[in-house]
Length: 93
Ligand SMILES: [Zn+2]
Image (cartoon, rainbow, N blue to C red; front, side, top):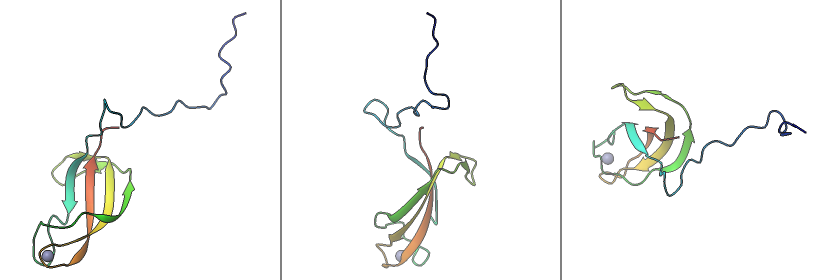
């Protein structure tokens, strides 16, 4: 009997594992807008919060590839200003 695999059509193999111990995701920040506090221009800020990420790919202003975009808020350590940041990242997938 030479029966072909009976796997249901349309079933798709799962995507390759994104992050394992062997293949850590290389998160590279390609671009961050704004790069500094719009008020005092300090780049010293708290961690990003309220993050939304989308798998969107494109090229940054200086021609580097990104494949993930993150929208978030952060608080400036210099003046306490809270502002929105758009961060474009390149991750291994
Ligand atoms: Zn500031």
